[in-house]
Length: 139
Image (cartoon, rainbow, N blue to C red; front, side, top):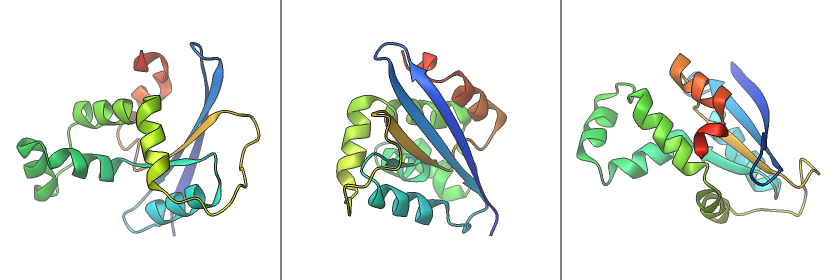
């Protein structure tokens, strides 16, 4: 199995809270979604963000995006980046966290910050650039 974990820590200046982004990158079927959801269900302070799920949900309201997804082509970086930025907003993270049942009170990190597991992001140089500039591009 070729699964790579990229670990990023950023300080959000507005709140002084630390946010950790953990990117799961690998081939289709390598376990990104499985392990991301498993970790988020076991640790109270992890939120799982599947970019594919976000795009599929957006496609329900966007015919152009639906056509791209059904064709099997990669979605344009601009659309993916906007979806990720929107999902990383605090209120959206809270909704994502509420969608996943948490099996215990265990915490993977004991720093009081937010911790997000990204499944399938970044995939391209443009997405990597967005991630490297985050969180300044959220404002």
